[in-house]
Length: 486
Image 1 (cartoon, helix red, strand yellow):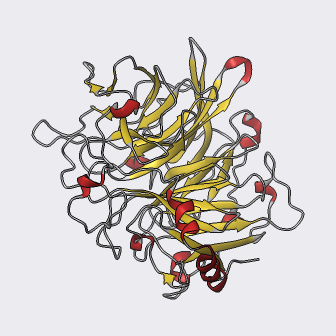
Image 2: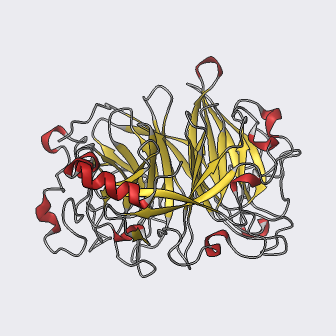
Image 3: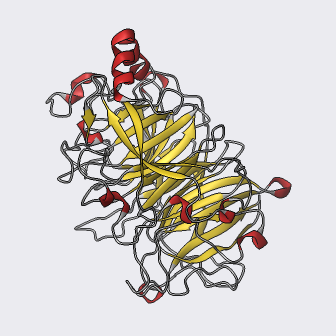
């Protein structure tokens, strides 16, 4: 049963401020130069009280200390270890670790180990990359494609890495499943014959970190559609999958897949589905007055709550027209750079990384929370346009995201200039956790790669994250503590 615009408007009128309160009490955070309760066009953004010095009122871990090795600045008392490094560390088979680390998830492995599945966002033909994912026998989808996933096993005194899937393209984010596997997402729409590919791409594949045999004969889950996939989460109670699309011209969509009647999730079950199994839908938002919302950038205040309906996708495999272009204006809600997602608190946290000229209103990042029970989407984080991306202290371009066992969110920054891992508390404070100090540009024109793949170990003691270029997986440990609301 869908929540209609009329139903949402009626409930808003009946409960009045109650709906606004539900959206704002738990509002997650703004950053320096961002807006807490004012619009994105307001001048005195710093006057909202959203920004706070590191460690202010017990929030965060203090200022970041420069790294003498020039890789990762961390607060005092924290340290990091390099887990994998493209072109330096090697797989079990002898090849170098592939480059361009992206989405990552951590799983409990046997005998106290941690298993991590690591995407490698490599687009186009293999010849374009120095360190593509090796074409391991039995694990290849398209031998022309450079991307895929590796599985990294971390023990106290040993690290091993092997291929989980190869021959896929532009493996960007993805998502873990309640049954202990990883769904890797191709952020591309290349078809056979384009960019050297021999098969169609733009699909989701399942990778099992604990069972190498289960990964043989890779098969795309075509029921989830073919488009520029970014991330995916699973509703463990209802069985729905939610998926983001990072695309423009027009902007991308948030999707929901409903499994067919009688289907039960489990290891390897998705690959048994028919290509047209279940129902794939795109979201359609409306405000408390029942007015259709064409783009998520229209929301300029944290605590904004939209009602959500779902509209069937006409051709999920995009045979002639890309999925996002199959909807006329006014049918679905769009957003620029729909990126990372994480399932927690009974719903899905969803990132819209930034909005520039492709969107009605500019911003430098949003995080939304979709509540499937209420069928509402609430703006939790809003980053105003960063006036000076080269300066340390301001955050922009949220991308991969995780919910911290110590409260709030941990967000990987993919913005302009300086790149951070930063935290956001439940009540509107942000704080730095790490800063990328690996300059891949020049001294005159420095350049710092984005952070990706932020995820905690199953025991919560280690934060894993990647520097995408050249491709470094890092394990961060230190005096983690529960963050106060501030």
